Image (cartoon, rainbow, N blue to C red):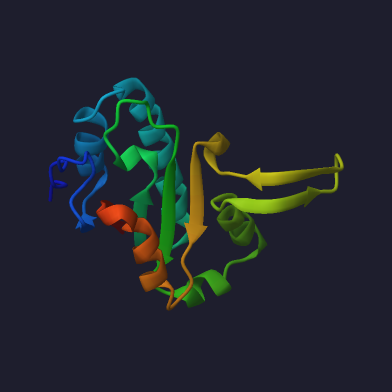
Length: 158
């Protein structure tokens, strides 16, 4: 199902809009200015979701950030919140799976042992996106944040 057309405020209409990668590309890259910058962000999203699907057996991803607005300036990033269908599957991840999952998330206040350093924030895909994990029961909180200002957002299901 195609994502709805942009509103006069240059955002998607309010609500959650189901779509796949082709729908996201059509509306957020092809039908928006600054296609080169959007293409790079879309590639980051595509790679990110590919890894997420390997770690999380089934779930949803809500897409937000500057990519989902149609403005005069190029988008600098996007946000993704991952909503697993079964939280227990994440609890059963082995060490390698947990490490891969943490690699999908934006981490704040990171202390690294070798070489010793403190990082305010570490983001997936070279900092092009912020990745978040929705805990069970927090969907309504995330939905409010994603819909801030009356904008809609894409939802991808796998």
